Amino acid sequence: MNRQTASVVVIGAGQAGLSVAYYLQKLGLKPGTDLIIVDRGPSTGGAWQHRWESLRLGSAHRVHDLPGMKALGVSFDTADRSLPAREVVEDYYRRYEQFYDLRVQRPVTVGAVFDRGADLVVQTSAGEITALALVNATGTWGAPFVPYYPGAWQFEGRQVHTSSYISAEEFRGKNVLVVGGGTSAIGFLLELEGVAAKMFWTSRRPIDYRDHGSLDLEDAINAVAEQDAAARAGKALPSIVSGTGVAKTRRIAAGIERGVLVARPLFERLTEDSVVWPDGSSDRIDAIIWATGFRPDIRHLSPLRLHEKAGGVVVTTGAAERDPRVFFAGYGPTASTIGANRAGRLLARQVFTALGGRRASSE
Ligand code: FAD
Image 1 (tube, rainbow, N blue to C red):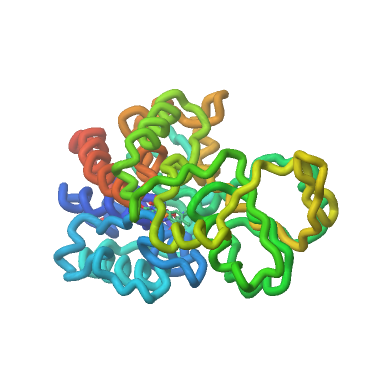
Image 2: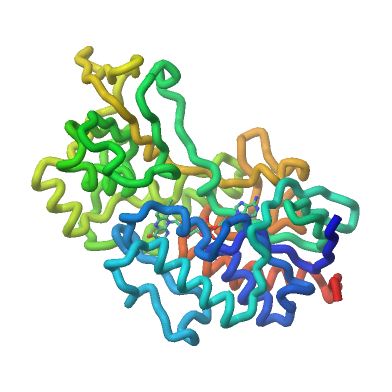
């Protein structure tokens, strides 16, 4: 079996993992030897590489540049908005990894992490890595969330979560129910207009439109504070993007004007081919799109027993309270591109301090 040893392992090479790696390298850790970064994706781009073709950068929220990205002469702010976001991000992260020689190992999936006394042992699809500290930056894309809804198990039509949505064409001529009150749900409705035969939109909460042209997640102070409180209490984390409200971009404002973006209160139940509304009326539907968010993708950490009964992990100053060698980037209050950047800077310093001069290197 392939065995490697490192001072620090970073799991995930999305915005959060790359940002931590950048700062750790600045502090003197050498990528490929005492800093090992692994990612299960086939290519660069973090979760963006898996997002649907029609998604464009900045369609709702600002996407922040990685630290040190200026040196490459590229910026998300001036990226070509006619190109799919997944292509732009994949390209920028690829250049970034090359420029800073981060030596990300991929596709490498982490299956489990074990506590072996002084060391952490990271079991991957490419062998084992022994490390002194771990930065978990695995995001949420791999853990789609669909709440319990009465009758959902009975419904015989197609059910698709945001994470497996490909394009509106798949729903041509169909009656489609879109569930969820965030920007993904709105994006799907605007794409389905004129393609689906009928669309129905429902959300647990009324849609919280904000009168901004776009929303910077860093300005969403309440949503970030909610996340922080949940992470400190070890509670299940709400999705940060859903906590920010929906910015009324020109495209969304026009959709509201046209009457496309009218959400109904949550349905009462689903049957094998219909949605039943609270007033007892029903509509036949062929498909459901669940735009109901994500949860942190941290199943591989379960052997470490970090979870509290309340459903989450207590993360106070970047590390898990139950195991201070395990750091979280892009988790809770830092689950946005700007938050991930901030986490990178702070966590790198904390990891470095935790190492206290110890090094474990494959060289
Ligand atoms: P990710 O980009 O998800 O990266 C995690 C990486 O970890 C992936 O590359 C994955 O392959 C890897 N990984 C996961 N599990 C394992 C494992 N077990 N083993 C090995 N590797 C693993 N934020 C914004 O700031 N602006 C926006 O406009 C915006 N739009 C969004 C739109 C959508 C539809 C969604 C779902 C989210 C959006 N976000 C946006 C939030 C956004 O995803 C984050 O801000 C940021 O890109 C997440 O970075 P990350 O590094 O935490 O996670």
